[in-house]
Length: 258
Length: 303
Ligand SMILES: Cc1cc2nc3c(=O)[nH]c(=O)nc-3n(C[C@H](O)[C@H](O)[C@H](O)COP(=O)(O)OP(=O)(O)OC[C@H]3O[C@@H](n4cnc5c(N)ncnc54)[C@H](O)[C@@H]3O)c2cc1C
Ligand SMILES: Cc1cc2nc3c(=O)[nH]c(=O)nc-3n(C[C@H](O)[C@H](O)[C@H](O)COP(=O)(O)O)c2cc1C
Ligand code: FES
Image 1 (cartoon, each protein chain N blue to C red):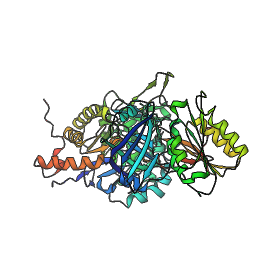
Image 2: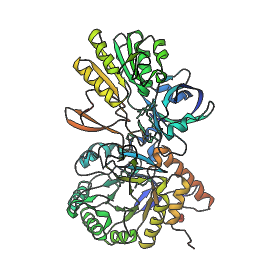
Image 3: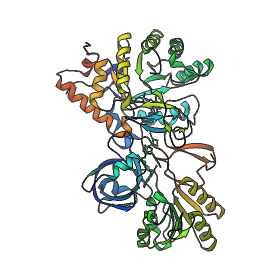
Image 4: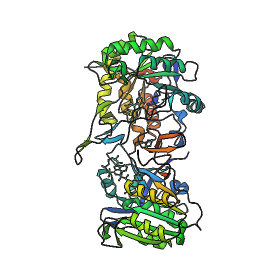
C-alpha cells in the first residue's frame, strides 16, 4: 500500500505572510515514506474535491509533516481557519518527487511565490552547494528565506516591486547567475511562465532541470485522468498525469509549446 | 452477516458495490489504499478501438456538491487494455466490466469482437458518445440509435451486455425499453449530466472543452428518480449510480430498484468510500433482518 489516509493533528500554525500559513501536522505514516517534491491531498469540509498541497518538510523520526499554503479560494480559506489541535484529513504521500542526485553537486533552485515551499527539502539536501533564487510580489509576501539560509543555502531574493532584494524576475537573476557561476542541476516550482523560462535557460546552458507542474486534480492518485499535462518523448506527444507521473518532470519532458 | 452477493445477468458479484467507469482507472491506483478484491466489481475506464488523447485541460471544475469533468475518453485503446491492464486486474478476485465507447456502430461492434475471448466478465456499453454518422448527436439520446447499437453489439458479443444510459434525454423510460427490446442483458444509469461553469473574470468557460459532465452528490436525487422510472419500465437488472456517497445513498438506490450500485466521484472525496458503503450496507441489511441484500431491491412502497 503506497498511499495512506491519515487524520493529521495540527501541532503548529503560523501566518508567515498575509494569507500564507505554515502548518505542522502529526502524520507519522505519511512522514515515514515521503520524499521531496511529493504532495498530500487535503479534505476541506463541504467540498467534493481535496486540495493538493506540497510537502515543505517531513520528519520520519518525529512523524511530522510541514505544509505552507496561501489562501487562493474557498477551500484554502477553510483550511486556514483550522486551529492547533484540529485534525486535517489527508491522503499521501502522492506523486513522483524530485530526484536528489549528489549533494556535492552545485544546485540552483528557483521558486516563484507559493511554488517555493516544496523546494525547501531540496535545499536541505544540497545545503551549502545550493543557491536559492526566489521571487515574490513584494517584501511582505516573501517567505521561507530564513529556512533556506538555515539549510546552508545561498539565497537570492527578487520582488516584482523592488521592495526587497533584486527588483525584477527570478529568471533575470537566474540568467545572470548562470553566466557567472557553475551549476550542475536546476530545480524549479512556480508559475508556468516562469518555469518555462527557467527550462529554456537550463537547456541553453546544457544543464538538467527538474520542474514541478501544477494542474487541477480530481482523484490525486492517477485514476481519473483530469490532471494531465502535455509531454513529449521519442515516441511522440502525450498527455501525462501530473498526480502520479509528476508533479516533478524533467524540463525536457514537458511540451511547453502545446 | 447477511449474504451480500448479487447476481446480474449470470455474473456473481460478492457484494453490490462496483467502482464507476472513469473514476477508478483500471483498478491499480486504489489498490494502493486497500485490496480492491473487497469490491463487488470494477467498471474500467471507457475504452475505444484506438488510443485517445482526450481533451485539453482544465478538465475538471468543482461545483456545488459535485464536479464537472471533460476528460474526453483518454484511454490506451483496446489493444493495450487487453495486453497490459486486464491481466493485472484479473489477478484480483473481482468482477471486471469493460466500458466501451465509439463513434460509430462499427466501432462498438469491433470493440465487442476484440473482447470476445478475453477475461472480461461483462461489457458496459457507454452510449453517451457522439454518433459521427448522425451528425454528432449522442447515440444515447434517440431510442432508435440505442436499439441499433445494442442489437448489433449483442450479435457480435458473447459477454453479458449492460447498456449505460445517459440522463440527458427527455424520457429515460423510452430509452431503457429500446435497449431492453434490442437485447440488453442489464442497464446501468446514470452517466453525467451536461453542465457548465464560467470564470467571471475572464468571461470564459472554466473547462477548456466549454462544457462537461456533472457528477457527485448534486446529481443523486435525479439519478434516484431515473433509476426508479427505469426499474418500473423494464424486467432486466438495473445498476444504479449518480452521486452515491454513503451507504444510505446506496440503500436508497437499491430500494428504488437497483440490483447493484456504482460509486464514482465519492472516491475522490474519500478513497475508502466504496469500502465504507459495503460495510454500511451489510449492517443495514442485517438490521432489517434480511438474509440476503437482494431482498432489498425494489422494496419501495410509493404513496
Ligand atoms: C501538486 C500541487 C502542489 C501544490 N502545492 C501547493 C503548496 O504547497 N502551497 C500552496 O499554497 N498551493 C499549492 N498548490 C495549489 C493549491 O492546490 C491551490 O491553490 C488550491 O487547490 C486552491 O484551492 P481553493 O479552494 O482555495 O481555490 P478555488 O479556486 O476555490 O478552487 C477550486 C478548485 O480548483 C482547484 N485549484 C484552484 N487553483 C489551483 C491550482 N493552482 N492548482 C491546482 N488546483 C487548483 C482546487 O483544488 C479546487 O478543486 C499546489 C497544487 C498542486 C497541483
Ligand atoms: C472523471 C470522470 C470520468 C468518467 N469517465 C467515464 C467513462 O469513461 N465512461 C463512462 O461510462 N462513464 C464515465 N464517467 C461517468 C461515471 O461513471 C458515472 O456515471 C457518473 O460520474 C455518475 O456517478 P458519480 O456521481 O458516482 O460519479 C466518468 C465520470 C467522471 C467523474
Ligand atoms: S487527479 Fe486523477 S489522475 Fe491525476
